[in-house]
Amino acid sequence: MKEVEKVLKRAVDEKVKFVNLWFVDILGQLKSVTIRDRELEKALSEGIGFDGSSVEGFARIYESDLLLKPEAETFRILNWCSTPQERVAAFFCDILTPEGEGYAGDGRLALKRVMEQARRQGFNFCVGPELEYFYFKDNGSVPGLTDQGGYFDFAPIDLGSDLRQETVSLAEDMGIEIDTGHHEVAPSQHELDLRYGNALELADDIITVKMLTKEVARRHNLYASFMPKPVFGENGSGMHVHMSLFRGRENAFFDDRDPDKLSAVARGFAAGVLAHSREVTAICNQWVNSYKRLVPGYEAPVYIAWARSNRSSLVRIPAFKHGKPTAARIEFRSPDPACNPYLAFAVVLAAGLAGIEKGLQLPAPVEADIFSMDEKTRKRHHINHLPGSLIEAILETGRSRLVRAALGDHIFEKFIENKQIEWDRYRTQVTDYELKAYLPIL
Image (cartoon, rainbow, N blue to C red):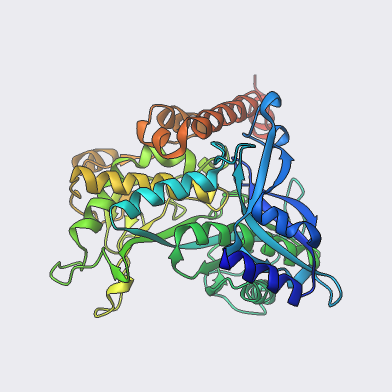
């Protein structure tokens, strides 16, 4: 209750007049209900009603009444859309039924539930996501590139550096720490690396930073896109996720006696992620376009293997300063920034916990370039691959007990249903490629 009282006092002191109640649909798209300041106390104590039947993957028409209850700890002032006279604030919200129960379609609740399972085992799940994205001159059918820069290039080649800095400043104003930003490999491609921390808070931060990135681009008459593969022949955009488990302030992934400084907990977690990687792919790569990125040759991981430094592997053990146990972690490289981060973190954590519980063992690392191996060599190394299309991934996820348990029946079934519809719509399209390649000769 003290946190609620602090928030109410701060809202008065900061002259907040409008409050955005934020939540995401099943696909991770940000939604908002705006209330006046006079409704804030009621919202924090009882919740504010809204119609869930119009939200993707939420309630059916005859069970549509739901409540948004702001989580006091997520209170933030939105300086970028405030004036001195009328300030605007925002909260991320829990979604409740009219009876006050947690709503089964709330992805944020699903992540909380799996994190609570981890806490009962003494673990806190921490992540550090790297968000890749593009700036374009417009969002038309042929997006216009803003630069021809490459990896780590700087102005004037990197015309997006000022936009990145503006985005970081706005994020920092809201209490979101971004460690680094830089130009990525492809023209017009950029990256922002969020500060390592609690997975639920970082999922909130991902949603917020994506929104801020788009808003800053809009102000400069540009368009920011987190589409996984917007430009043919160039690298796509990923969301590499660094992750570890902590026991209090102690990193449970660190073991000074191990050659890689990784504990048995870390190895079991990584083995679980690898073992269930095909099952979680549809959640971490949820769009038809995601599988245009997951192809060999563009730095995106396709093959299920781990390594210490090999960036063609699915799971990597980043080098860290010896004597700094808090930095021990694994990097999961397949997710893309267009996924729902709450669902993605929930299923990856569930996979890692399953690896620990079952005592799964990591196979031998693969340090060679997997992309350059032929099929026979990959089979000799027992290297499987991720699903190659959305429908293949959906079928894999649809059979997964682990994913169903992590997300709950409602989200699991609604997600699969939504993705099957997307695949059917995609596969029945007649594309420009088909018309150019086939119409003249068939």
